[in-house]
Length: 177
Image 1 (cartoon, helix red, strand yellow):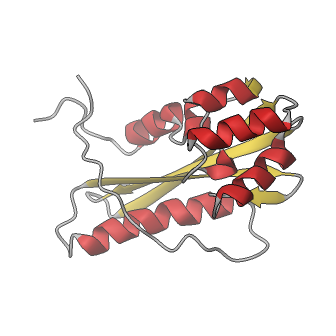
Image 2 (cartoon, rainbow, N blue to C red; image 1 turned 180 degrees about the vertical axis):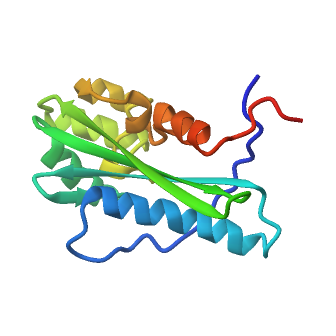
Image 3 (tube, one colour; image 1 turned 90 degrees about the vertical axis):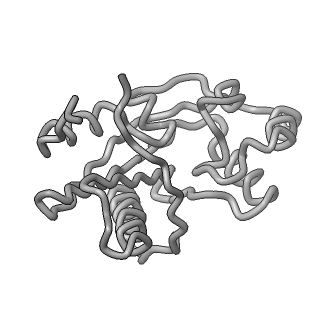
C-alpha cells in the first residue's frame, strides 16, 4: 500500500542568490515549494507537505533547467565526458509540530563522451525540457550516462531513502486511517 499523497504543482520563482552551495540552493527551492502550497491552501494545509528540487553542479557551475534548446545543447556539451554532482533536496513540513525538515542527497553521474549526432538525437526527444542539466536519467537520457554513484532516486529528483528516514524521524503515522 502506497503513501496517501496528492501531487500539487507549486510554481515558484526559481532564482536564487549568489554564493550558495548546491545543497543551499535546492534546500531553499524545495522549501519555497512547500511554503507556496501552504499559501495556496490559505491556512487549510494538510499535516504533511513535501517539496523537492534538484540541481547539477560541475566544477562549481550550477545547471538548473535549460531555458531553450540551445541552452540545453550547451549544458550537454559541458557535461559530456565528465563526472558531475547531482544534488536533490527534500523539504518536509510536519504540520502537527509546525516544523520544516530539509535534507539533501548528493550523487555523482558520469556522462559518456558524446558525438554531436548523439546530442542532436537527444535534443530531438524533447526530454531535456524542464529538467536540471537537460537530461532525464529515468528516460532516454540513460543512454547518455555511463555510470552513477549514490542515490538513483535522488538523481531522478526525489531521494526515496532520505524521504523515508525523514518521515520516520518526524513520526509520520504509517498505516493510520
